[in-house]
Image 1 (cartoon, rainbow, N blue to C red):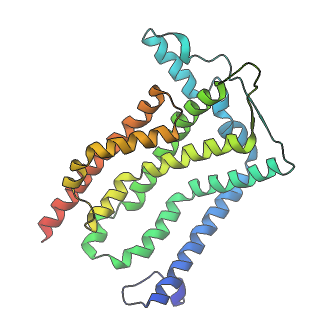
Image 2 (tube, rainbow, N blue to C red; image 1 turned 120 degrees about the vertical axis):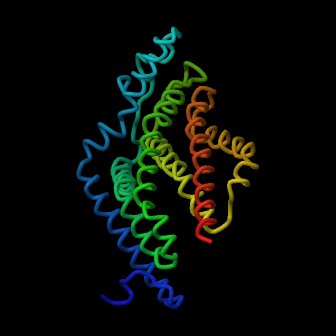
Image 3 (cartoon, rainbow, N blue to C red; image 1 turned 180 degrees about the vertical axis):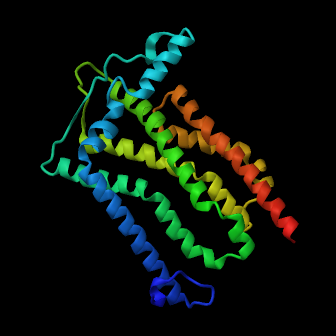
Length: 273
């Protein structure tokens, strides 16, 4: 194998590092394209089951919210009879374009572990042996957190947003007829944003390793972080208190876990000194 196709090594020149990075990006892109092609072929499952799942009143989230509201003796506000909106495509290439971009998004989600693997292969040679051992579960942990975030976005954020925005009406004279691209964009942003937010413990791990953050800093700015979390929750969820609380709780838990991870990293580095 030529040098350009190998992983980066510490004694390589800057241009050689760029060449190595190029091959890592090429392989990661090919993985996304292959997974995207498989998603493109599975059009019926991707659209009818996944994309339009939150549009159906018997969707898992709506059924669970209905049961919970009945369990706690609340009004049946969470029990849906219908979602009063339709989805339409108003451009000639609208459905084909939606098919292509949805397949690419699905390909990225499916290929995420391999993309992380290629990223890990690129940065691994620059780390010390003890650091490599410490970060041994990087690919597994980041993939699990990403997929949990994706599921959270799909089963919590997306249906809450669709239910609120799809039912919102300023006047009986206005009909909710959403464009296909707008509907898919809401699903995509909810899923990907949630997936990346759940990577917070991994990000904190590496920031602690390079000395950017410490447990003390994370604790000191906990209140400011809470405000930031509330802002993020307000951006990616509909503007109602219940939805924002549902999203805020797991993110706060992730923040506390990140403090624990940062503390463990610092403690281990002190032992190695």
